[in-house]
Image 1: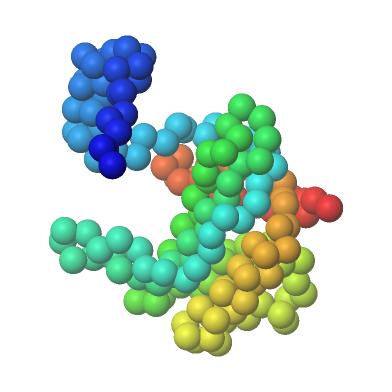
Image 2: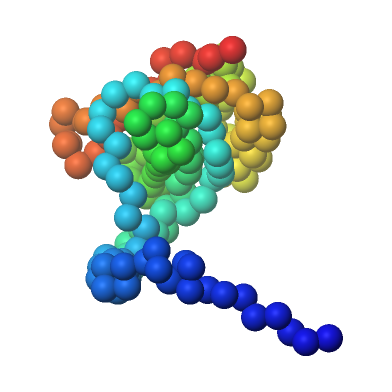
Length: 169
């Protein structure tokens, strides 16, 4: 049986090759992954992925701290399908910040899970990782939706604040 050849010319006619080459060069230069800037505001979202991971290790060797990673997918409006990333770093070596960082992550988990204070507690990283996975499994499988308020941090405009303001039915 002779092998059929697919006629790719109909697709080639739809492509501006010069513009494509420029786009590829730009993506290579910027490391790809050109995500749109999501402006401050309230968004209907679901949790696409959530885990306790590790922050990026920088060239100078810093970083690599435990981090609550949450990917929210926007469900409606102009930015539907785009992602908002919550990255809650916890630096056990930073005594002045560690307690606040854990508190902020606990509050996010309580709000996502509609949990009481004592249902979300930090009792070591292994326990916390299991708790995060348990919460993620329930809210992702049961398709919980939320209203997420994203705002710019007034003390440090390079950072964003995230708050679950409503759990949707």
